[in-house]
Image (tube, rainbow, N blue to C red):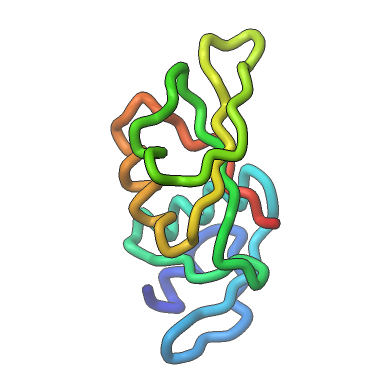
Length: 116
């Protein structure tokens, strides 16, 4: 992904561009999740977040999402007032691109990518 493409996404600040990676700063919470989804939609890949190569995501769906097979499930919580569950999953960042793509067009919904 080019530096210009990242800089064109709202709320991204490019800190440093190097030949193999671009360091950026983003807001947290929903905006952060939205930004990462935009980067992945433009075929960008995330290699680390705050020095971490693993990240937690939450996905909502009634039954355990099929794509979670083989991933580390941290918890499953019933969402009161909704007819589904919240699935907390630990993922390797190298797999995040494929996971986000797998969610497109499915009945599973990415709720949040945590930046811890």
